[in-house]
Image (cartoon, rainbow, N blue to C red):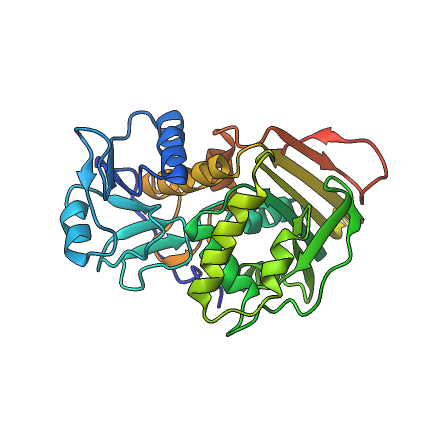
Length: 338
């Protein structure tokens, strides 16, 4: 069963405030901006360990009592702290994948990757009667947050070594460059997308412009915490003098109106942090307004994906967004509309 398929209807929009834990962080700041743009009439209570304003609250995300006290004034909580929040009966929209199992509602993985990376092919698939195969490739260039490093560690690491067994040969990939490194992976999000689309196989890869991460991914380490720490440190070093960017391509092959149909989508922006912030804000607004349903599930596995995508796209998340009705390098492009 795909997480979220057992969820129940959420009531329509009600008065109340949204609490944002980790509001002072890089992505937390982007969530604040996105919420203000998408829903300026919703009151947001900002919280962090070190309050940055008179109206901010001091909250320790690792302290159960601190969370419960803060939640009394909120109809839902956004967790951008990078720490797992524990609060029975709460409604939580979580940027990361370490969600609260005792929450009334926990929508997790609400960033760029994971999150939009899994949602995008499912939204594109709405134009197909049948999808036979998909390919998803993405690149993130940005100093890595603790939450992002933890998510990557789950995807690529085992106990003691990463699951990348040997060094990768650089290759040429449309939209990414003539000499890039592609690292295939399979995780809960990609497997869930496969199951929802009813396909046997799909291809997912993280793309890097150099082999900097490969040196860490193929090296031994004592435990996952060390692996996470090295990822964060290396990402800051590797990004010196480089521009931040997020690039994503999705290819679908299947059938529409009884005919073989192909579609390639390309999306790009200059701020992965802003993209994650807009995704998380869209999820929170969707839950707040009753667009999304109660339950515990990953963001892409919500019931009302097109409505969520509409909220997300109102935030102007991409600098470039194109759809190509064919496989790569064949035909004319169109502006991105679904």
